[in-house]
Length: 284
Image (cartoon, rainbow, N blue to C red; front, top):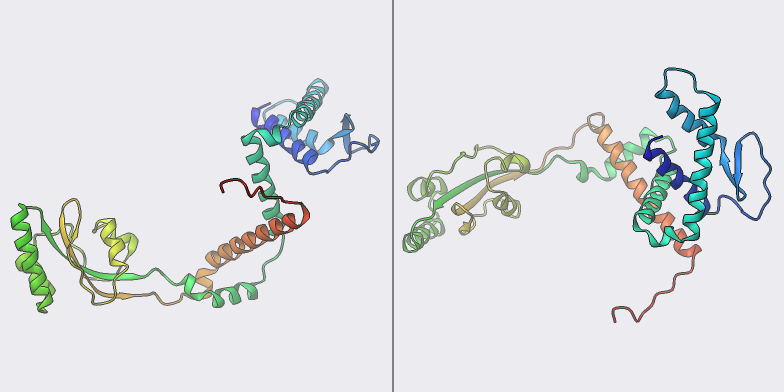
């Protein structure tokens, strides 16, 4: 069998043992759904069926009784290793085991949370209540005056002249043409979303641009290639799209938020269920 089967078999048993699914002090009788008992801990027939299914997928011929017995033995071996691991406190001392248990618990909580039918009326209300979240990304109409590096003296004279002309209200395009250097690739004179702007403009400049007000012009911003004056001509936020066009995205976000809420509620319940004592002397 593959290591993944053995590993997850161990993990499954570890979770059962850790979270009290079985009481080792209670006598258990072998029933149709129990293959064997290992120190009063059952090996379930469902685990054997799962292993047999995985084995049969890789076999052209029917699985033999010897192979079935081998799988039973391996499940028992896993349980023996599991019990010894618990005795050695591996679930507390081994970080990979701890993380796997935590992640599996989270998966189980979210799986239970998603086991419900989502009404379309709930999705529509969620969409209307969170309409700003689903609006298309903000788009900018941006212009740049670019000045490439020269000598320090030349740079200072050029930058002073551009600043002066812009402060005096000279047309940005004229100043760019007369004082600036060619900026390639040329930015289209249209509204562009952030991801598209980054095809033309240094990402740091794009970040600055999205912090500007409409009509605002920056002083020079230095990049690896030279100096840049940004002019945010205008910006626009997209109009809300029809519910039917957004349904998959709305449903995904609805489930994500429900999952987040379920996990937080579960952790809050655990914090009430178990005693937590902080050592106030740590990092004082």
